[in-house]
Image (tube, rainbow, N blue to C red; front, top):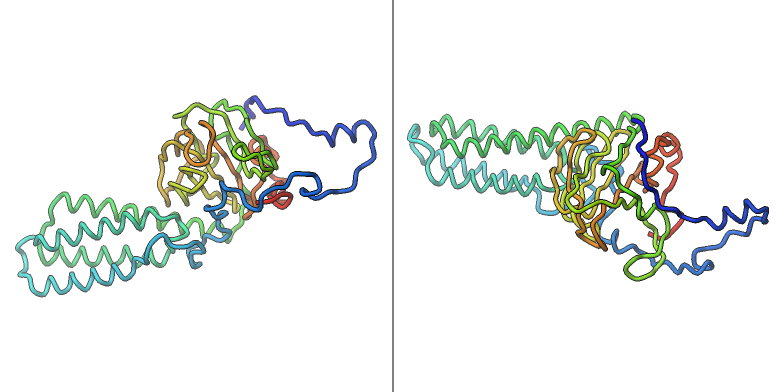
Length: 328
C-alpha cells in the first residue's frame, strides 16, 4: 500500500548531531547516570499484561481468568435439563421452568464470550457448543416447538460460539506456521504523530518512562480501523489504556488501539484490514483525544512507525524497537 504523507513530530537527536560534527563517541551511560530517574513501572501498562506469546487453543490460558470455568455451569444445566424432562409430559410445549433455565444459560454464555480470546480454550468452546446443541435437541424432541424469541436467542449464541471456535483454530494454526507478518496500514486517516515510540517525559508526573506506542492526533469520534487482517483477542476496559482493542495477526504480530471512546468489535471476531474496530477517545490515562497505537512482534513491543512505512521485514527478524532499552 502506498505510503500516505503524514505530519510527523520532529524529535531532535543531540547524539546524532555531535557525531555528525566529528565528536568522539561518548561511553555508554545508564538511564540513572543520564539523569532520567525512570520509574520501575509505567502506570498505563501496570494493569494490562503484554500480549500472550502463545494464544494457541491447545494451551492453557496464560492470563488470570475473568470468571469461573464454564464447565460446571454446563454440567449443572445438563443435569437439571435431564431431571426436568423426566418429570414433564412430552409434547406439551416448553415449560416456563425450561425457558427460564435456557435464558439464564444465555446470560452465562454472554459473560463467557466477552472474555479475551486466550481465556476461552478450544476444547472448552467445543464442549460448550456440543452440550448446548445436544440439550437443545433433546428439549425440542421432548417438549415440541420452542418459543420463537428463545430460538432466536440460542441461535445467536451458537453462532457466536462458532465464530469463536473458528478464530481460536485459526490462531493456533498461525502460531504453528509462523508466516511472515503482514504489512500494516495507518489505523486513523490523516493523523499526525504527537508522541513517538521510545523514552519520553510522562505528561502526568514528569518522570522519564518508556512509551511503547505511537500517539496519533485525531478528533474524538473518528473511526479507528484495523491495521491488518486478524482476530480480536481483547475488546473493552484495560486499565490505563482505557477502552482498548487488541488484534492478533499472522506471524505472531499484535496491534493495540487504546483510549477509545467506543469499541466496535468483540473478542473472537475476525476483522479485515481497514474494518472499523473503534472510535477515537480519551479514556484511561490520557490527556486528550488521540489514538495510542502499539505493535508487538513475538511478544516484544516495537516501534510502529517502520511497520507503517514499509520497513516491516527488519522488525520481523530482529524484534527491533523492543522495550529492553528502558524501564517498563
